[in-house]
Image (cartoon, rainbow, N blue to C red):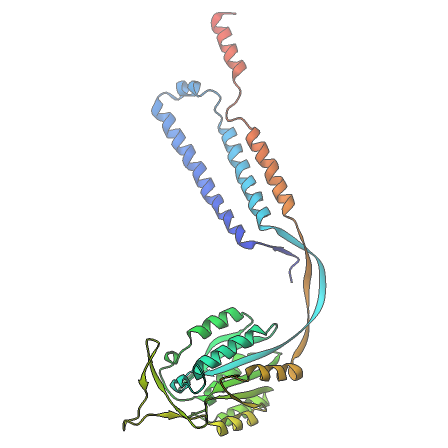
Length: 348
């Protein structure tokens, strides 16, 4: 909680230009001295540039630097908080474990199992507010791709790039995906939910045992089966195009089927629910809605709800300094000194 902030903090980076301003002043003064030395005797040259003052130049450079500084601070708009409220927030921590094995490229769920799942996850985040989300991807191995975050934009960018090429090892490491998902929660006090989106086929390890471990830690495990029971061939995608279908060693087309029975067992062990997806809906939002009604953690937090702008003071000082700057003459007024000099020479 902060009672002071800048509305446009990135503008403050412009203050680094002061380094260039100081460097420019030093360069000009060095260049000026060299030029004067080239003209000849310093005492003679000083009479030719009568009225020039180093002190005036330094004063004007300093005034310009202060004017610039106050102007930048004013444009960044410093704000002071004047009102603090205690607000009630609700949130859950969700880890989505997404199967990205080659079988997820099957097109029995349009446009494909994987693309439909990615669309559903993106749509889910559009309705999230205080919930945190993490992403685990798995095939023959499982990896945490995004830790718990409320930066839904970053998660969507990750989703756009996810493909089976992320994990060369094929298979469905369902048990490992649950284990990695549990580790993603760290010491969170929020309600914890794991949602697994997979076709469940050829899964590796004891996923039921891992789901039981999650339930014992207060983490509910929900499964979404994506695909059709009757099965469909696995397309081979090259450069974004379907160039054929995967075949086994005997030249027969490989068919991928939804393993619904395994996913139901995992959901039961994890004290969660099982949902079968189709082209119309994946069922992700329904699971979250049910969780929101039952398990959302309520917590209080203090936040500043009213900030007052302070830019006018800094802009005002910048304007005054600028007016003062343009009123300072470039040279000392030597009119009377010159007249006195001529009077002496004339003997008057």
